Each structure stands twice: as C-alpha cells, then as structure tokens.
Image (cartoon, rainbow, N blue to C red; front, side, top):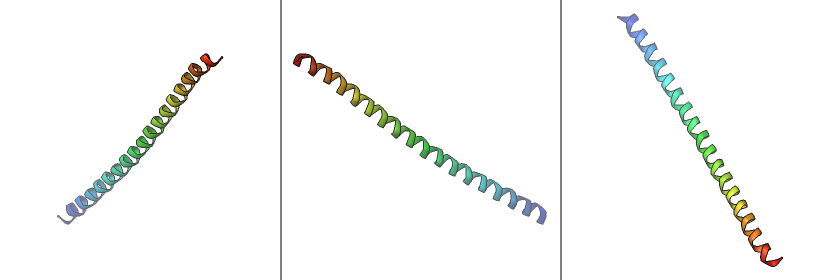
Amino acid sequence: MTVLAIFLLIIGTLLVLIGALLVFIGTFLIVIGMILIIAGVALIAAGTFLLIRKLLGRDRTRPRS
C-alpha cells in the first residue's frame, strides 16, 4: 500500500503541475491574442482615419481649384 500511495502522490503532483502549466500557457496565449486584437483595431482605425482624410481632402480641393 505504501508504494501505491507514493505512486498516486507522484502522479497527482505531476497532474497538478501539468494543469498549472497549461493554465499559465493559456493565460499567456490569451494575453498575446488580446494584444494582437488591440493592435489590429488600432491599425484599422488609423487606416480608416487616413482614408477618410484623403477622401475629404480631395473633395475639399476640387472646388477650390
């Protein structure tokens, strides 16, 4: 019984450590995903702003010239 108890203790400890590692990796991947989403939204906003500015700039310069 002592060998079985030690074996179960070691297996349980390994499972807990693997589970904690997977949670840590998952959290890290979620953080990377959020950073990529925020960067993408910022790039979309910047591109939209520049496109609208360019379109409005063309519309404003046509009547002047």
